[in-house]
Amino acid sequence: MVRVAVIGGGIGGAELVRLASQYPLDLVLIEPKDQIECQALYPEYLAGLAKVDELTAPLKPFCDKVRVEWVRDRAVSLGLRSVVCEKIEVEYDVAVIATGAAQNYFGVKGAHETFSINTFEETVRARKFLEESDPERVMIIGSGLTGIETACVLAGSIESSIYIVEMANRVLPQFSESTSKLVENALSRKGVNILTSTRVQEISADSILFGDGSTLDCDMAIWTAGIKPSKFIEDLKLPKTKGWITVDQYLRALPGVFAIGDAAWIEIDGKLSTKTAMEAERHAAHTARNLHKLAEGSALEKYSVRASTDSQVALISTGCDCAVGVYGKVCMDMPSHLIYSLKSWIDRSFIKRFK
Ligand SMILES: Cc1cc2nc3c(=O)[nH]c(=O)nc-3n(C[C@H](O)[C@H](O)[C@H](O)COP(=O)(O)OP(=O)(O)OC[C@H]3O[C@@H](n4cnc5c(N)ncnc54)[C@H](O)[C@@H]3O)c2cc1C
Image (tube, rainbow, N blue to C red):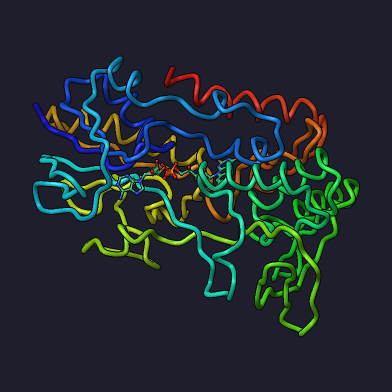
């Protein structure tokens, strides 16, 4: 049987293992955490609107159920036939890298000391601080999807003054101008202070210094301003684009090594895959089928990007059970409760698959 080592049990890796387990493959999952986590629900968890068991599923019972070997370890490098982990070495015929991305602080002084909601541990720490310190001013740095959702849900559930800081001249700069406008209106209705064309230069314990020399008092700063390849990806000797693993149309970096999810640079037929859960899940489903084909000796299927950087697909929570929907050039905020229900259902049903 072909032995497949999947490195990383997040959205992409866990979904891949779940789907590939229906085929005659010898699957091993390498993941240091003991649970699968749904990042899309971190903003709601931060605001006290989602419960732990809605966004996490324990790995052990899931792996037992689908008869997948789970190695609770962190991969440090990839050899030709084995994954070197901190404690052990795992042999493979085929490897799939699904280790996600790391927070990017862009070298801003003091940014490492801020709160982040890039991991569950960080989100738990931020929620604890919110509950215990009741900050007067919360500053959210970065207005991508995570920053927007965090600002909106917090504005709807806590008394603090919320600020969102963005270096570009509009929020959600990676989306169309009409989407930015719609989201900016939602933020304003909630009383969120929007600071666009504003560069954060330095962050200290109680204030933020901006590029123009001005400062603002701040009791809590939450950094959501970007992601970068992790140290593990950085150290791998594989083809890269801007530090991410470059893959071919079958999502392979090398004949026996696939890369999926945030860790991969997936550009096919001129479309660049977005770093979203939606795309990571599609990469996983596609790769599960291709692993089966590989094991059978049949031709691999080409991947087709759905949510690309120039045609975004997203459901963006705007707080108080409302959301905005984006599909390419179409962007709508009505019926906002129905769009939110759809988003909530998608996010919550992801974790249910692993229980
Ligand atoms: C706050 C937040 C909200 C988001 N909201 C949305 C949303 O609403 N919709 C959407 O589509 N996307 C959303 N995203 C993006 C989405 O969550 C990611 O694109 C998606 O999780 C990527 O999946 P992945 O499998 O590549 O990485 P991840 O889900 O991050 O999983 C990576 C896994 O690899 C493990 N790992 C890391 N390094 C190693 C190693 N060296 N060895 C072994 N294991 C390792 C990690 O522990 C982790 O479990 C959000 C992201 C964040 C942070």
